[in-house]
Image 1 (cartoon, rainbow, N blue to C red):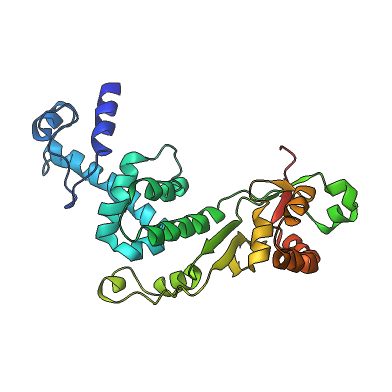
Image 2 (tube, helix red, strand yellow; image 1 turned 90 degrees about the vertical axis):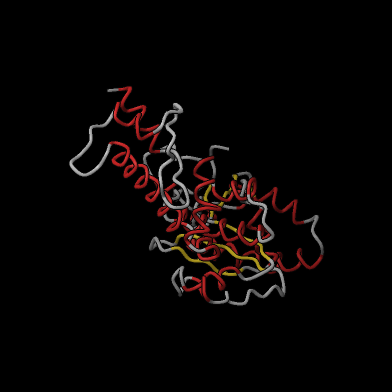
Length: 283
């Protein structure tokens, strides 16, 4: 039984070709049409190799479908066929699923694009993958007990040395275009539409700063930030105390320092209300 299971697994995880056909050569180097008889009995209508091919196809169609659903913008940039050939299959070949849940299947796709994708549109594809991935992860990421007004009421001295961190579902983005608006327009149409029509215009007129997060209703939202608010919040991405961030702020230019000094109390009120921060007591 174990030998059969190992053979079965070794066959179905091998990539199918562009026509969704199974590799005709088995992992051992024999013809699949012949070797399959050693493990599978024929059915009234299918030979053993045809039967295992169905499992091979279903395995890959399922995984590619999950990636397409998790990365809707990236899929629209390529179309189903090119996404599967240029992105999905080579990614899954390098990073096959290692856990029972498919929710995390694409978590390493941005890393794969950074390492392996080298076309001229790499930056846009990478940005799109990071955005799709963040919005997908935001649904499942943890939410720790947030900083609240009561914590701040304890007094400044009590919280200055406590390390703050962004919630795991909070992501910050810095782009040379408004990718959220672009994504919204792209998702209004199905994948096939964009094979025959021009993409929405992606204006590169300035630097954009965004934050995405899951709210108390478990809905994922995003909004634009000022450069100063973005830079200040970004100090908490890896964890930092308020005292450390204030020391960093003193080294910034006058415009950054002035805006932050004038608005910091309002920012913290909003960030606490939105539950973006928590005390990282493990650091």
